[in-house]
Image (tube, rainbow, N blue to C red; front, side, top):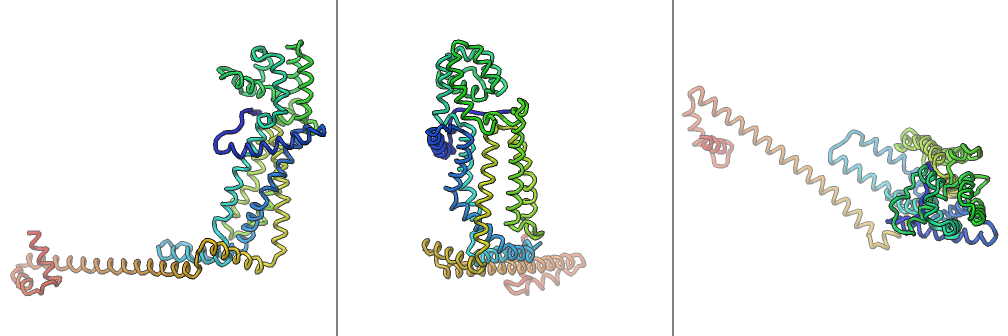
Length: 429
């Protein structure tokens, strides 16, 4: 099913999509001056521009990946050392050793996650723009509105070709709120037109044929990339006899597979001791399959973006990885530790005070744990002695020697176990 909407993205993604949409519109207008009004070209270039903007984050992410591959053997050794140990003392010791390892190499355990979280809104923003191009490119939208203004909103709403494409694309044309929303919906419908639909529209409104033909050619020129209509899915294009479209999902899956394999090698995913190995191996095959399915059923424009993004990202990762591999491990670790120390100094964190506080906290927790164990043992001992005393009292009462036990209780010293047992016996009576 093809899916296109004209309304700009709102919510928390709105600012990201609007910024990326502004860049996309600028690229479209720039190339329009040279007669190159082409959506496909702008999709590729927007990926390049955004990836360049995100290059500092990419470098940090690759650096974290490199450092993580260096410290992973030591992390695995600690996990193996404390395997099966669930007591509080072992868990505290394990966490402390893990912290010492990360501090030793100047690495933050959450460093990789933070970089990914920063990049995600940008990537989602690109996706929203790709799926809603007319909403962010006024020049492209103008070609559709020219037709709507010439033919008329009411006539188009009642035309068979509009109703048919709207039904196929699951676009509702009922209960629309005002002319603006109605025009946007009509643009959504016409954005999905193929050559057959355009010809049907021209026949239905022969009096407006010149305007329809002129704007139709401009729209087809803008959305054409290597003979493919980027607004239609490869599935639809193959059905229309444009078999070259099948290359889009195939290339998307292939590039994703290569990228996943390279990522697995960079993170040491082939090692059996690496806990990330299983998930990385799973992603190596599931992500290409997902790419294949999505890029076959969704608009070709999205598949083109997927391929461009994967290829450019892989090239950047290879270059950054090659750079870090050229640096000796000792030098890289030392630089990383120095930067981490500088960051802590800016925050006013004293390393010695932090280390002493950590040691004191560990000792304090250990002391508390030992004290609790001693109290537990003392209470258990006292409980056992009281039970024995009560048992002796019961035996004395049963065999007729209660008087002797009374004498013993009277002679017992205050605060002794015998006196406590006497007090408990009186309470029971």
